Image (cartoon, rainbow, N blue to C red):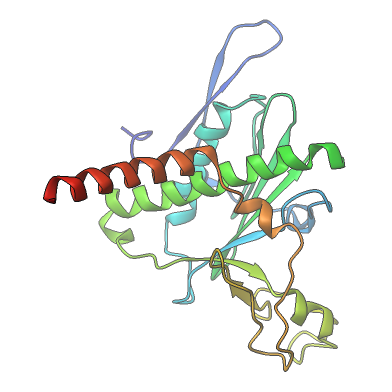
Length: 245
């Protein structure tokens, strides 16, 4: 029952003896949170960090432990069955078998930061990173949708997919609040909403050029699953149209 409602997360592992072992994690009870986890950044071959931003100003209470419990189960099904590193408002999970990816989730006051980082950086692995990034994005969007249907207190989380504004980060001299050059503090971080097919425009700068964020395209490559969904929708629409003729 606790697993059904996301209070605990089952993780299956295969030790050296070869027999499968099951561990259970309780995300809501985590307390420690090392700063090094927040400092992990993707390489130039990885997708850029993606943000689940909540315009109301706060990540809904209890959302992150629910999201994390489902991520633990999902990652355990996709190898390498390496136990995740779990902390208070943060986690590092492992995905993949041939190419291992680190999925890093950091929960802040108004957003959840998602970083996908390959264990080894190589231009040859860039395509694998794009495929995994798209799969992770679809999974997270599906989970957020299912959570809104399962729990009444998450009916309308109103999140946006965003990236950090590269223009503001490069041009900022020093923030007035923290006295830091190119301040990346969560209250000072300028996020741009990502809408597929539309350019990113920074409203805080006087430059009319679109903002370029390297690695963003990897999150939104057309995935086989999305193609199949679109094909089913078009077939259904065509049948409905032909039946009316």
